[in-house]
Image (cartoon, rainbow, N blue to C red; front, side, top):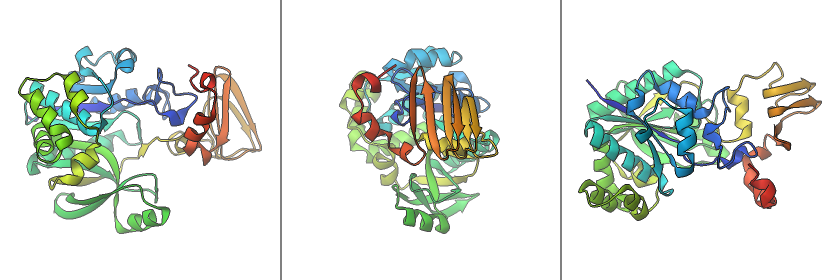
Length: 348
């Protein structure tokens, strides 16, 4: 029987969801896509495939306690605090080391992020099952590439290559966020979105790190021979993303297509795609009343919001603080935050 583990990456703050997101209550702990926090949604989707005792959550030290409160079924030792941010390659290398140590090098590891929306959980799990089979059969690093629903320049893309059978293809190349024009061309040419969903045997991934990722390989070797701790590992590695540090350098990367309503919830405006909207396209949470208003995103906690004759706005009301911007400008909240007084910007 295949032993399957899950690794959920749940660090970061998600400043693009200010003023709702704070360091103490970051994006993954917020009820953005549904009425429950994004992390809870992610764990619920995984539960039919992977039990809590084989689920690891990687986060930062300040979030360990709230994550344990949110997910009491996950064993305390499975909520792992990274001593410092060191990129996804280091985080997944440490997770693969832990999976191999606890479950053996042949254990299959599913890696996801905590802050996605998925419209079809059954389809999501079907794609993961296909990826697990491909990882075992081909000893490869498998990613699930999302079948695009639009030409979105906000995502990275994957060019599929040679088919190995059953929908499994080699990855010809990864493409960083393109221009709008190039995104249109890639959509037409059959490229897939780079979702960040990865499946591989722990030993296969560690072998590729040793072979292709000098930023991490030396620190990994010290850990594997028992001469280094987790703190020393994260202090020693050079930060690099798993895409750049491993996948773009490896010749063993495979892709399968996935079409299950996946969305990377990166901005307030993205909630129009994942939240239930009214007949005028307003995506709301909380006590919201709208008349002659369309395409708005509203999130209110403990306040009432009334919209009249406005369109394509983002309105966020929380604890006496109200943000009003447009859907388009909500993609660039960093400019706003950099201009605000610290007492207002960092308000809890």
